[in-house]
Structure formats: C-alpha cells, structure tokens
Length: 178
Image (cartoon, rainbow, N blue to C red; front, side, top):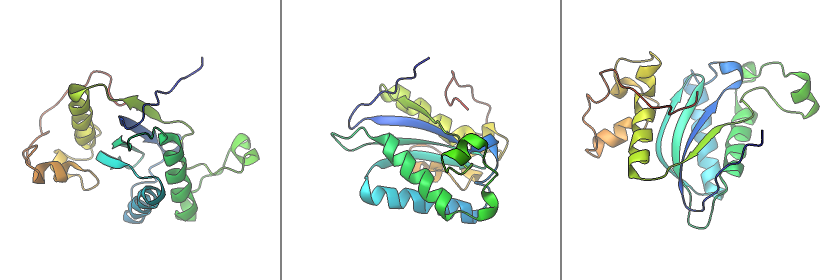
C-alpha cells in the first residue's frame, strides 16, 4: 500500500508523533525543554504556527498552520526529531535495530507520524478538543487544566474554554490514530 500525504500550502494540519516502542522519553522536564528547543530552532528557519499541542510521556499531538505557499511539514518534523535526538540525554537512546544501525539512526521516534489535513472549522475544533482532552483520556490527569504540557491553559486564558472543561468522559470518532 502506498501512503499519500496531503500537501496543501498554508493549511492547518493535525499531527500525532509517537516515540519508538512507546517509550516514555518525554516524561521529564529536561526532555520537555529539549523538545521546546527543537520546535523553537525549527521555527527560526522554517516558520509555522502551533495552534494547539499536548505532550504526553510517549507521544504528542499538535495542530500547525503553515505559511502561505508552504506545505513542507515533513522537513519540519525531520528537523524537530533530529534536534531532539542530538540533544537528548544519552540514556534515552535505546539500542537501534539492524535497519536503523545501517542508516545511522537512533531509536527515539517512530519513523512515521500521523498527519491529517483539517478540512473545516468543525474538524479543527474537534481536533483541538481531542488534543486538550488527551491527558485525561490516557489517565495522566483528572482534568485538562491539570496537565502542564498542553496549550489548554492558553485557550482558557483567551476565554475559549472554561478551566473545568474536559472533566467528564468524552468520545472521539477515530481522531488521534495512536
């Protein structure tokens, strides 16, 4: 099966990126800071807007808006993953399988990631809510506001959501692909 990605310049995309073997490499403050630095460094040379994001110990979800005329999210993800890997605690590096060793790759991230072109405002809102509810869904917290590695507080500060949003069970129609 040949997977084809949707490349639409200036569009909004939802992404899911997972660590290799779902190892909890994003569970420490230094790892989170390294990830933040990887995003900042990448945005310096390849700008994009982060509309919503959540980082859990073994995966992350985010929504990006790319600049007009630009659809190259693949290079951005390569730069982010490479920067994180080069600057992470060496103890996070797992032994690579023979295929990765042959390519001189580290076993930090799964090779692929899930991308979804957001079609309209309803699709966008559903994915923002999925992102912000994800720590509750995975049992990390009892409410979205409690998770520190999320853009949810920014949405509360903007008046988009009340601080107690996401405390009840919510259902999702196949969003996330994790």
